[in-house]
Length: 78
Length: 418
Image (cartoon, rainbow over all chains, first blue to last red; front, side, top):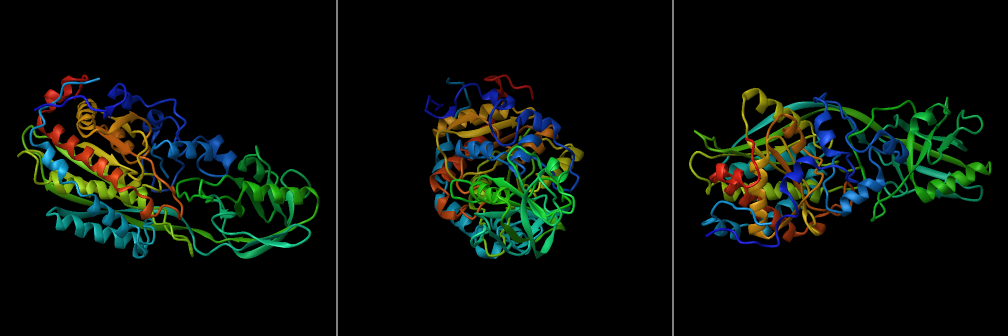
């Protein structure tokens, strides 16, 4: 037995998951964030959004970006 | 697109064994009062950790705990008391909805009363300063010498909550309160008219705590066998005084999915295939648990395939998948698993522990569905969709089962580089 086509699986190229970019997610550009994650300092640090977004929202995330990300089923951090 | 895959004989009985009620019960327990929202370093977090260790032991895993320190975890230790006068009457603000303590706030335990003013206009001494929209907190400090504190506007979520975050800037020089945007506008109007005062406090402090990941291992890989590592963070942002934040979807649901998938895979994988689980602490303070674990794996030369689940609360159109490291084979298995189980997948950000493993050079995928009540009192078990958890658990079981079998065959479909 082998798989037949179903409505499931990746919508588009699976390898796009390796280069998630240009989204409105709350945590910025994921590939860049992955590459620039600092080594653990054991001190809580900002992980969401840009500094400009965070400052404007008085939070560590832009609320609009966060709401978009949550509503669209995308994961968020912190 | 239909990509070739490995034969799936024997997989369907495993998928049929996925038990949604068991996962719902796990979420209900993790979201319960005894665990108090599971903030890192709290008694509730420790209680959850002990319970999870027992769950893994009951599944015949070898269990151990890996402790690590976390410093400066923010804690609101009392309900803030905030009232203001609009020139006519006193209005009391409700914590969580109308007002919250900013993560960068200095501690102000006692009530502090001061006239209202707008930052950048007039003398700041002794006054609560409304920070206008568009002015950064950094710039506001420049206008706030000897001010009582700063008041920032902040949007609320669909349930009207100012959601809680733990990862963010360090403590600043002044008390800082966040006001929902309508309240902020009303106070700014009062300040501009030269009348009104505010009395409030900011009972927030930073704690240095101990955290711990919970590890369960069933088999170690041998020979050319694949090593599977299933992960989910169990910590939450924690309860506030008088305000429960159950953290059901984030990430009780992910933990439930991982435990259920491990329960099924533990007795179903071929000889030589390794299986372990890491239930991670400190994600909400910057993915510190996975950073610790990934560093240990890298130091030990281990190279598991990592599947991280963060948020299995409410699936809408498709589950988001973010991958990193040499994950082509894993993605191929995930794709075939999605097609076999009928779960649509889409490339999208999953900013969670998977990034720490990927940054360590491991093949890692993060999977997330939607959720309700993000980091707020509204993240309750009744809003976690059992069908969503079932769909994700089936996906993880199928992915692990496929990846464990013939990774060379799997890799050929989309150009694996492992």
